[in-house]
Length: 90
Ligand SMILES: [Zn+2]
Image (cartoon, rainbow, N blue to C red; front, side, top):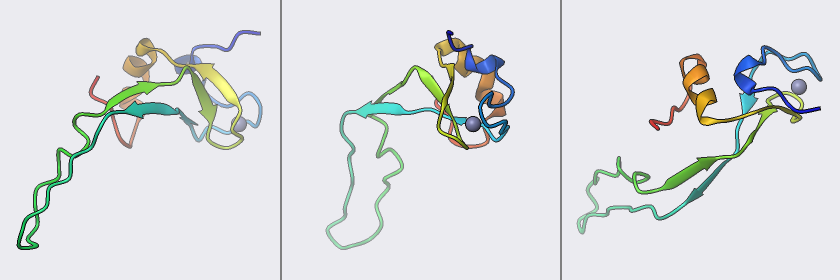
């Protein structure tokens, strides 16, 4: 049976948890770290700015690690406001 779109899943069909789901992201590219010659703090807030990121296709239950739905760019629009953690800007 095909998995539903994850934005339509309200709880895990396997374990019943409504805690949420996790996505795996593939990341490639470089990070840049800045250091001063005298040991004073440097701005590294843009360290990850040049990384390329792509979310994997399947959303996985946080509690039992089973695949519970499919992820797409439409999913991001639907679930972004539910997220309390890190948000991708794309
Ligand atoms: Zn589960």
